[in-house]
Image: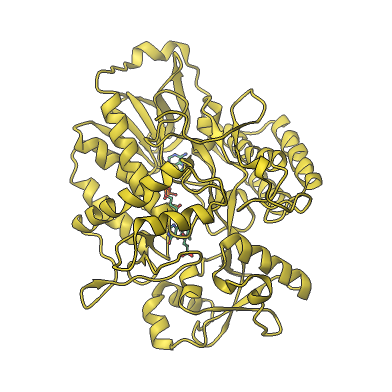
Length: 523
Ligand code: FAD
Ligand code: SIN
């Protein structure tokens, strides 16, 4: 790989692949660095589908309204409008590129998920929507000769020169040594940070690296307190927290407590299809009330053949653990799932650090506000990945970045040893986050979490471990700062939503936490 390219894209989920295709279509050379094999990402595991306005009884205004309601007063309206109006175009383009969505008699099938006023979720192979998107995007990217994708290339930090992000340092998978690559701009698409928590639906790559790298390089981070916990992750001693899609409740699944009683109507009139934060908190309350660690998802009223066909991956995975989804009660509990906050960007993916763009789950465009509407994030990755690619290509046309201009002022922090995320640190942080910065938070627990993070940071730990703790600290700091409850952030000591808190949290390195009325800081 050449040490100089036009653009560096970090990550190969929906956002990174879509941004790369856009850049290459504009004639640019694109170096894509990705931590694991190309397909390993949150995108790969997405089940429920993509929310998009394509059915006859739907319209952009309704999708926009549902997204704004779910966001609990903190969405940026322009960002939401961009998502829902441009989303349809990008999905049609993806279908033209070969992505297959489930159909009946040639027509797309739409399913229901919580807080959507229409059936507007399209899906692939029943419950393998993300894998189909990755397949189609990797195939499309493969047609672009100017895209050079390097798997198993763990990016460690951003290189900033004269106030501009001009490259990255990563661990070369072949040489097993740190290397640099320079470009006109970097597009961060490293996804979320579900792995911060002991129980998560996210794969092991989701450790928030991009958030840490951007923050340490000086970019602003927004709304880090807002973490979405998915209500229904399979909870078995011997199994990872495998997601049981919200679409299962959309198709008629019921939640029951250990006595077999349906409990959601006692908590919210929308019952199983209330927004995720409400269902997750209700499950926690019900588990406490009944003294258990799980509740149960009951699909037994649905036809077995239908379930097998509609949720083949879930069916097979549950069978592997000895559960028949059409006959058995499925033990579930909430798990961390999605980060609403991230690198603060405008509508073109520009971060506040010149030369650094961000798209997808690592970013905060204001699309999700305090709580993401189900199945809006694959769409976000497509729309804002493409927009970040367009903007970067357009704005950097006349820029030249040369390695020799930069190298002398920049000191490497990376070594093979420094790049190991210590298992002990990871385990400790995950436990602290789950117990003190989880679904229900309060001042005392958050202060204790922050004290523990400072203690860990004061020790001698690797650069990678430091980044992991840094992201945990960003979440806990913002959660302590926000003295109200809103969307994915619930404080038992400030249990009401308050109008004077209708602002975004903003964190920047070496600055006290502050606030902003809008995520977008330029047009
Ligand atoms: P990702 O897809 O996570 O990609 C991030 C990429 O960055 C990966 O390739 C990763 O390896 C790479 N990376 C990370 N760190 C580094 C590093 N240091 N160096 C180099 N590369 C790095 N959303 C929906 O809209 N619909 C759904 O049905 C849905 N279902 C979901 C089910 C599950 C189980 C999960 C976990 C999430 C689901 N989501 C769903 C959310 C959605 O999948 C993600 O928000 C979205 O895919 C994020 O895309 P992304 O491109 O931003 O990040
Ligand atoms: C699910 O299938 O329940 C996940 C959907 C999402 O996270 O958007």
